[in-house]
Length: 285
Length: 285
Image (cartoon, rainbow over all chains, first blue to last red; front, top):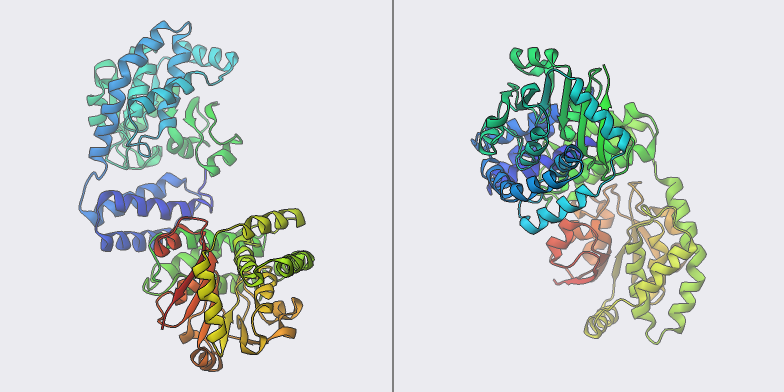
């Protein structure tokens, strides 16, 4: 997906939020904004928005001298999600369709946007979860999803955010572990998962975890490590979590399941769905 | 009021809206946005936001070759407001406090934001009007306003937008015509009133109308014509309509009545009021 003109004001807004998240120093906020405006005026709009996201967060890290301004937030998100994990696990176990329940919960993890709901308590999380599992995903979609999982020999699971990764764990646990490789980002960017998050949340105990060698809040194979690219090409099915990964891979002709909640108006326009939709969309080879 | 960092993404968003309002040509939209990003990265934040607004709309006019992209919109806004004028006039006449009713309606005219509600029909306008006149403005505030109007010898009325100007006419009609000079912008900028709007809506038949020699969506005396500056300094009371004028004059130590609906989060923060408040605020010499 290209960067739409609407993305530009949104990216400027996000850069202010990120700067404020990183430091209370208003001079640095201003410095970040000016650098971002400078970077965006020459930005190649044919590139997907997460490339600009990567630029912005690199500017924030350079201007603040912090290599991971979201580290504490990510830890809080993971801890909150882990607190509720046993309850969710029990829910999946008792469901007549555990895979369907886990699939919905993994999208609910995306819907939650821990970055926004960093003050959400256990009750809030439980409420979102309850709402999530009542979401309609058609029987045909679920059947197709199951068939793809059965047929695939090497599944690459592209993780998204901290907190959400605990909900991903539920889905990973319903899939054949030997087929799955879970992918985290190569370096810190916003609240995206890195190896540390996979370790804390126990994903590393379940399946192989690799990083993609990139600090873009999405997955652009051309900007990732050769090792990731090799694995990307060898896999016969990709599970892509979150809007950022959708934005980067929506035009790639591979078997890719996109799982996310459509939150941004540009995405809903691109996907042609209503705001808030739980998207389970399949690109085909 | 200075330009807050929050204003920057909002200004980028506004420039896209303005470009789209002016032309369907997407290449021009992109060109406008890139020029605006370039202008904003060096913008002096000590200046009020309407200075940036002026820059943006100059970029839109230059890039589209249109000297007044909002001309038709403004005509529609004026026509719609004029259609309902007789009803409003009758309402003011029958009110136990005509000046108070006209004051509220003039703020309602600002609240309406014809630019946003360009598709509003007569019924919508009537509804906003009805809501407006029930708004609480304290007796003390109304008494003080009346006393200031009585005492003043030369009142400068700084107009704001098309459509709204018809509501200003109601207030002007309750004030002593010989004291009032109504001020329009020196050149087209967004939907701000120019001489044409004052003529169409009959303000020129009531009071003296001058322009300020500037195309900024606000009033910065230092950027206005010498003639306007002379009148600005000679007046002993200023009525300042709309957020743009507030942003430019909020730090000026003169007797200025600011009349507007607080719509933007930065303004509500600056004024320290709730969003949606009908502001009647007085700066003092």
